[in-house]
Image 1 (tube, rainbow, N blue to C red):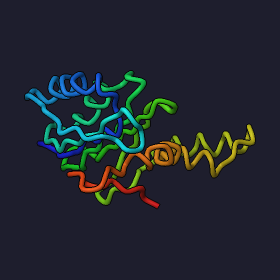
Image 2: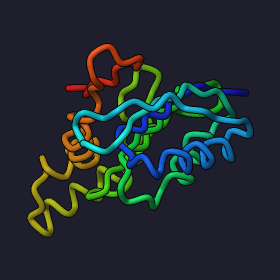
Image 3: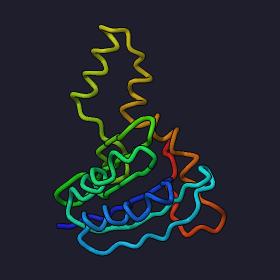
Image 4: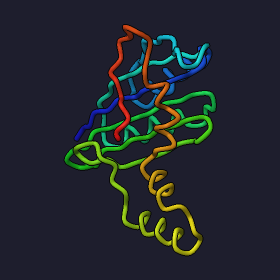
Length: 164
């Protein structure tokens, strides 16, 4: 069984670009050469995207391979398939990594235990329920990544839009 997905490198310093390609190649098992373009939202940074096909869990492996590079912003998505839900990983230098399970229509699926924990925190600790739910949905990551999702004019990329 295979799934498909996309790796969006929203911003990476030029010196990191070959390392990203090597890390992705190590996960996919094939040589990877990304088409890097300048990232107008971060001078001195570059962006690229790669559509991939692999076994379920490949998105997790890609996100893990890129994790820890503090100067990079990226997202990895995978589509649901017969044996697995879809996934979305988002990473920013200030927030770290976010993971969400996605359904066939791209909606984020929040596990029951995480919802119960948020409700408990809101009741017992006075946590802001709206802010907690926004965090479960990845809103802080979307807010930070949104300016980086748009490439320069004429860039050969697919648009990843924030879901409202």
